[in-house]
Image 1 (cartoon, rainbow over the protein chains, first blue to last red):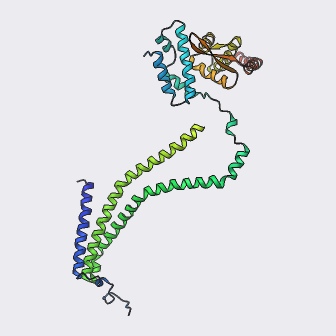
Image 2 (tube, each protein chain N blue to C red):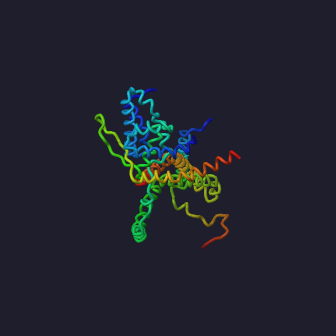
Image 3 (cartoon, rainbow over the protein chains, first blue to last red):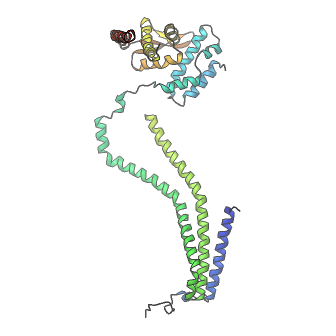
Length: 51
Length: 198
Length: 104
């Protein structure tokens, strides 16, 4: 099957819509709190800690 | 194929107009017209007279091979005063020439700006989106919501990148045609002026 | 006859023809073609060249209600004929040389 230009446009548009939806979900999971995106120094993989 | 006199002359001037200056064409056409009329005076019919002469195509071919005008070398030499003037005037015409060249360059840049921008967005979107999406599981370590958000943003970015790339591909063709046209136009303008001066 | 030689001769033939009296295109073709094969198309560049070199001059004269272009020889052209005749001795010497090469 040949991939047409229209298909690619549709695919990219669906990627965009899906992306917006998923990131909205992620933002919703954070409780719409931008502060929760700040780097967390207390994570287990953090070797260096700043006080 | 027998032509009459008018047809012959029309055809001849048509053929020659591509390779000679108008005044040269006129002179040559007059010459052949006179020949036809003289042949007719000798008692030949119009068609016979025309067919006695070479065909316009053949005349054109024979003219191509022989330079009719001998250019005198005097006109090609610059006088020393003119040379001195040109050299002294370099700061003036040099900078004007530079400005012209830069203007032309900037036109090209402006034309290519659009596909360049969309191309860059496309590339950045595709690569960034892919990396962001693929590595979003790692971001889960920072918190579930961060991982999901990164995954979503990655997809969004990838989608934008793809769209921009498609747009770039389609616009590039048009831009290539545009800049070819511009180049041809400039070339014609410059060369025509030069060939007219000769 | 060799075409190169012919080309060279036609020019002087035309000049000589004009030295007999002013003439016009068709008449020149007719006169020249009695000795050398020539067409209208081959004559034109020759006349044009002679004119640019200042060996002939042109003027128009009315003939049967139309203008005819006449060619008139100039001193320059006459000089050219004289030079040609003078160089004939050299041509003869060359001719002899070529002839001997065949005879031996």
